[in-house]
Length: 251
Ligand SMILES: C[S@@+](CC[C@H](N)C(=O)[O-])C[C@H]1O[C@@H](n2cnc3c(N)ncnc32)[C@H](O)[C@@H]1O
Image 1 (cartoon, rainbow, N blue to C red):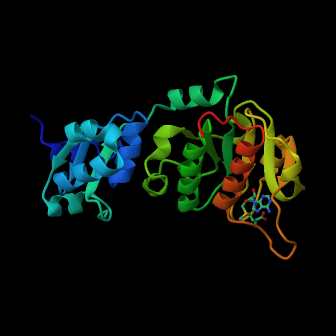
Image 2 (cartoon, rainbow, N blue to C red; image 1 turned 90 degrees about the horizontal axis):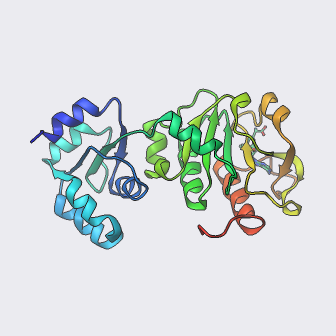
């Protein structure tokens, strides 16, 4: 039998950290391969599973190994209140690209153009999973698989295709770019094959993204306010998609 702590040390650099019970629950639910999962209190973790995730309770029972609290705390950047941590295999880039390129697309792709804030990126991935969108593509230097983004995304990177691409490599489909100067979103039906693009927190949409955009849309906002938060803008736009042309079967 292999020692799970040695496994952890061997795999930590190449695998995705699932920080806390909820991240592990989501990742398992959406098919992640989890070679090692640790709990400081295994019974407490399984009690959470009984309460919150009976659908994956047996899987978690088979995966979780109890380790001393101090061992757990030494393995993670900051201990999570649930005392659970796991490592998951990152889906291959080829698989993620195939998912993004698959047509006909039944739900939009969200494009974050050069996002700067890891928390925003995580919140957007969580939204994307909730709305059942095809994927989240980032442009620029931020790594959408950074541990802080995965933490913000609550393990839901496995429920959608998360990839970093250059603007000129974006998947096919009409680009609806969100910008306060655009046409009012409320009069527009967003198609399922849309790419919904959002600008950087600091500088908005890049020139390359604007050049690729087919439509520029604005969210309702009174004139004295400059802009909304990035993740909030994605939430409003996906809600609008779900209420207009959006596929409702996942919701
Ligand atoms: C924090 S805002 C960017 C603000 C930035 N200073 C600018 O010059 O646009 C981040 C992104 O959220 C979206 N956004 C924010 N408020 C919006 C609004 N009222 N209408 C459309 N998009 C909006 C846009 O995609 C924007 O690029």
